[in-house]
Image (cartoon, rainbow, N blue to C red; front, side):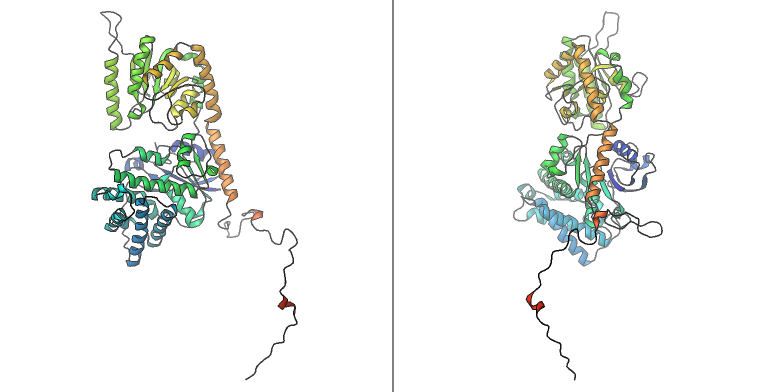
Length: 547
């Protein structure tokens, strides 16, 4: 079959977040053909280029969401009136105290049809008309209190965000030789990424599938903390309505864990459509460490990940201070680096805290002390890979206060290491009963769990072996590919053929449509039809009038 893969900021770009599992999926399903429709997240990502593509990728079409040039489309009076009606209806739904899903869908698809008819909506979405329509909706009777409190800067902020979110409407992807030519659309994320799949379903009846390893609506709630209540309320209404409409129209929704599944069901996803598919991870790099648990240092703890405030390394350092009082020989390795300036500032704060909590300890007056906490990054001779980091320690620690699917924790499970984690996100679902779980922001509980494992090597070995067995059963690439292969076939089997496939000469392909699609005749003898009495009477001969 031909699959349209929809991505944002990931595949096929080099280093794109979430692109690795897309690449594994495409390579694993080599019997199918893929058309990739990708949104780029920045100019630097576009300049970095693409990863090597397998032969089953037929074509790649890209579009930037981070910028949009004016397409030069000038709307006539009738088109401007249509835009005002549909955009005004969309704004009214966002401001209403009780949003209506049907009104939102009608307004959104009306804008999509207008963009298809006129060649784009870039200028219209940036126009004064859009801001005025949003202002009228906020001031209309029945609008929410937070919407009525919106000021001019708030309206401009919301209008700019909606313009960016609705840029996919103006793309030329929705043609017979574009998304209309695929058998199935697979969105690698929700929100704006799934919008082309929603439009392909509207224009051509193409079924689509939405995969979310991190729920986009949840991500929106965690961002823009400094925005005004009016901005947060209006944008939350838009993203909530878009998620609800996407889940309603999708053939299936595949979260990566139960935590994401709860979010999707809370936002309107039908339980009958939701299928949990765990992320597929390559277990091969961790095989050597998993088969050699005796290589770990019994007095070392390790934390591996991206340094940022959500990882709560401050609580980990305070917990380690309590651990050192119980087990003075214990060391802590913090492996990872920041991804942005906020993370760099947080890393500096953690280094200063470690220096304050653990001043250099020297064995004698003429020796130099060493801090029991080390901040390291992979790639050097002492720590070439993440596998080496997990293999060096007896216990892997996760101290996050916010977490989606804990991929780093699963890597430690592949290595056969015992884990101590905070109860956030999908942590409990990932580790099952193969590790210790403590409440977040509780250094005392974190310290007690770590000490209990440091003092019990047999328990560490037992938990590590169970963790490795669980990871190999649930979180490998093979199980991920097999799950999506079955879902693809199930969706296509339920969907009637939208077009007649032809060969190179223009003749219909044999068996292009299933035999059940059209069966001439009747399965049983047709029941005799009732004949009206007037039809059984002797017909009256027709008379002919000649002038």
